[in-house]
Length: 116
Length: 114
Image (cartoon, rainbow over all chains, first blue to last red; front, side, top):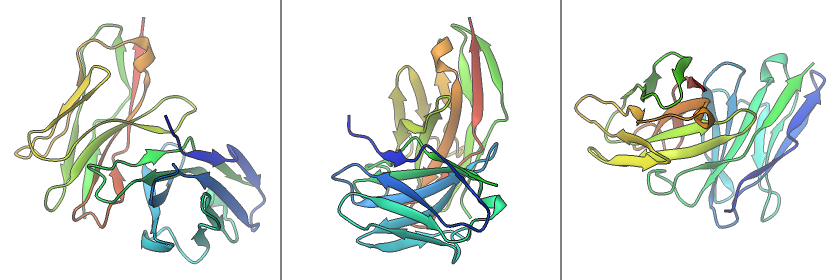
């Protein structure tokens, strides 16, 4: 069964450094998402992306964050200047279409980001 | 705004016991409802879904029924196994939660002992 893949599985970065988290969505999917889960807390929506532009973003997704689909397969999340509170598990998801009821989102295994 | 409330965990059961994990939601309109499962060290996997009132989602022996009158989507399984030990997340999406993003509950950890 096709799956969403994320790299790296664990990223350790110094505070203030830039980090790029990478995702390869399922190949025929058109809608892409990033979520994060701070340790022990709920999974939170960050951003959705369709047709090469952001379709929705949360309050968490401030100017330090950006997303990009640089080629036909990768979907990246960049944090420009990391803060300690960015430490979390970041999940990428993709779906065939919106209104997830009939086209549910499929998640990757996540990247654990640790900021020192 | 829209939200999901789940029962606090952990839920600790013996193998073959009956499982219920409660989930209620607050939403404008008619959202789609989901249960996702997260096994240790892994990502979120879709377990089951329901898109309209009275729909029953089922998978791997788990069931949940979309109850509009009680705004609930409780997860049940008749006989749990040790391999069901995981964190279970209830979630909703659309149409008024703001596009198609998923809104998750806090998760409920299930521990099953032999």
